[in-house]
Amino acid sequence: MSFSEEFALLLRACYPLIYIPTTEEERLEKAIATGAKKLGNRSVYIWDFVDGYQENPNNTGMGKRNPLQALEFIEKLPDKLGGIFILRDFHRFLEDVSIARKLKNLARDLKSQPKNIVIVSNQIEIPIELTEVLTVLDFPLPTTQEIKTEIQRLIAATGESLPDKLVNELVRSAQGLSLERIRRVLTRAIASHGKLDPEDVELILEEKRQSIRQTQILDFYPATEQISDIGGLDNLKDWLLRRGGAFSERARTYGLPYPRGLLLVGIQGTGKSLTAKAIAHHWHLPLLRLDVGRLFGGLVGESESRTRQMINLAEALAPCILWIDEIDKAFGGFDAKGDSGTTSRVFGTFITWLAEKKSPVFVVATANNIQALPPEMLRKGRFDEIFFVGLPNQEERQAIFKVHLVKLRPHNLGNYDLKRLAYETPDFSGAEIEQTLIEAMHLGFSQNRDFTTEDILEAASQIVPLARTAQEQIEFLQNWAAAGKARLASRKSSLSDRIQSQLN
Image 1 (spheres, helix red, strand yellow):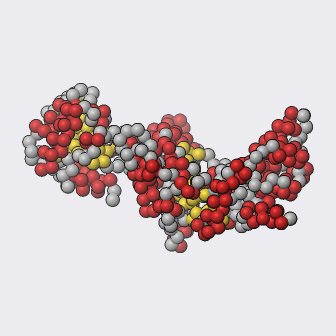
Image 2 (cartoon, helix red, strand yellow; image 1 turned 180 degrees about the vertical axis):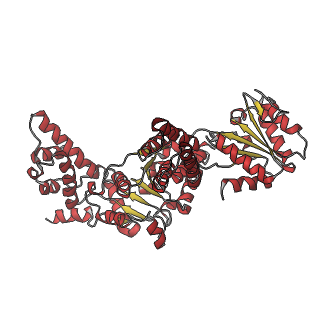
Image 3 (cartoon, rainbow, N blue to C red; image 1 turned 30 degrees about the vertical axis):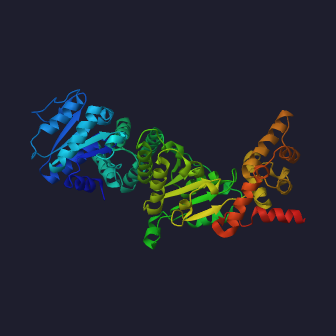
């Protein structure tokens, strides 16, 4: 159901108090005015703290700097007179006892009148005593068609014409931005060189990065890593490569649904985060990183609002990759958290979206502690697949050494005994191999020479791998994966590698 349809339904159902969180005040007011015209019997009144009521000659300035008077004005209007009363930034006054009481009284009285109060705010701040009388309605970001109409209007104003391919590229790059931001960045481009051209796509993308940073929920993450940068994990890489074209129109014609996502489980440093970045680069999709901790706010309803904002933003930017790192730390053991059920509600909203989403948002979640995750997260339908990313076996360690050394010493790779390095570093994760090479470089640099295989082995001897300090956790994960709870990311597990080394 679109916003216009849902808003019209609330009006017809006589919902007296509607709370709409949005930063797009102007676009929302136009949408409300359009909806009021369709109903035929509703006038639109707009109030703000500085100017009072506006746009109505008989009431101009009414309630100026007096929010209680603004509500009394609604109460005094004839019962049969229909109206939609938009109160800008009214959330700032809801903690006032007289305002809260007046709203409760109005909520009771307006049920039988063709009047609706719409509180417009850039965030949700609802006191507990008003949660039962206020109905929150989300106002989504502009649709693809709205963006295209606005871009075509701006193009027409220049007197130029653009090929459809460039228009569609501009539209796609602008998804996830407010109309005001789109106007601003494109007007800036037109003022700079008198028209729109392909280079302006980068301006829009930079505006998008800025917009995402300002949400303080999602980060627009640069993805330069490639699939070839992942050492080993052949099963996982094959799975990803087969789905490389799954977001194309050809896949839709074939009947394929959009891929839903992946849950990567394993100990730290085994390449889970690297995989998320490589997927975005290989599929040529923007990478959004979600810090789940940022979803949780201290105000009542704020966490739920941030979760909805995250979902709306990710879907507006689709197709994209949504990377959720260490999801187990956010939702692990939430039943024991004393937060009045906030974590439970956020989790419920999130997993419901995972199961029901139709948008091309590919979720890549990583977890180190599978025991901490609620069973609902692991149920089929949330993700396309769950992969266990274990410690690299000897062959994979050799590949990881090669990946790093190709970057560090591309012309001297033959000077390093990769096979020996892999053999001498059992139980090392990819991150620990990288740290070993850094330490070896320090050894060589401190003696004014290049680092050698012997330096790498010396550095490795000084590192105690996590596999030895967290042996119980690793064995649990390996047994969990071996029981068929997840697919193995590697074709040959490090467990069989260890057994083989013991036999030798």
